[in-house]
Length: 307
Ligand code: GLN
Image (cartoon, rainbow, N blue to C red; front, side, top):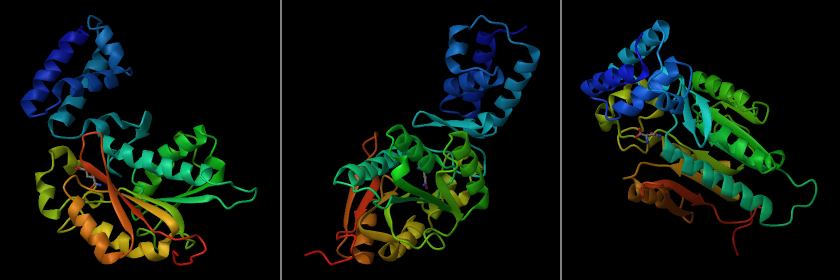
C-alpha cells in the first residue's frame, strides 16, 4: 500500500509538470480531500498507509487539477474569512481579497447601529449584496453580525441574475444557519429588488476587461464568465450599478464596490461623471492594491439636501 509521503511526492511532481504554481499546496489539499481529512493531518502522518480507494480518488483529483480545474471545485469547498463555503461552477470561487469588502460592510453596519442612539422600534439597517454569487459576502456578513448580536437589527438582502448562483448562495446560507435571515431574489443588480432605498450596498461584480479574459489563469476558465467579464473597459456592470444608485441608495448611504487593482483612477472618473457630488475613496487590500471603492451619498435620511 502506498504511503502518504509517496503519494504526495508523486502528486506534487505531476502538478508541477502540468504547470501549477502551487503544486505542493494543491497536492496536500487534494490528498486530504481523498482521505476525508484536513491538511494538518496529512502533514503530521506522512508515513501512514493510504488505502487503494483513497489513492484512486487522489489520482482522479490530480487528473482534474492537471487539466486546469481549480482545487476549490475539486474539493467542493473554499475557505473564506474563516468559514467554509460550498463551491461549484454555478458561481465564482470566493477570493481572499473580497474579505476586505465584507469587513468594510460590517463596519458600516456597526457605525449605523452604534453611532447614534437607536430608539426602540427604529427601522432596521438595510443592507444588500448585489451579485451574490456563492453567497460568500452576504453569508459571512450575516454570520459576523450574528456574533455581534446585531443581526436582528439588520435587513439583509442579496440579488443575482443567475438562478444557479442564487441556489448555491441559499445552500451556503442554510449551511451557516442564516438561510432565514437573507432575502434572496433574482434581479439585475438593484432593479427588481425591494424598492425601498438601501443603507449599505456591497458588490463584487465582474470587473475583468473582456480582452483580458483569455489571459486569466486556466482555472478561471472553469468559472462562470459572466461573474468575471466586465465588458470592454471592465467597468460596464459596475457602471450600470452606479446609474441605479441615485434611486437605490438612501441619503447618507454607502456603496462598497470591489474593483480591479488597476482600476482606481478609472472608477474615480466614472463616479465623478455619473454621480456628481458623491465622494469616492478606495480602500486597499492586504496586498496593498486598491480594492474596494467606498462611495458615499451625503445627506440625511429625510432626503433633505445637505445644508
Ligand atoms: N479578482 C478576480 C480575478 O482576477 C476578479 C473578480 C471579479 O471580476 N469580480 O480573478
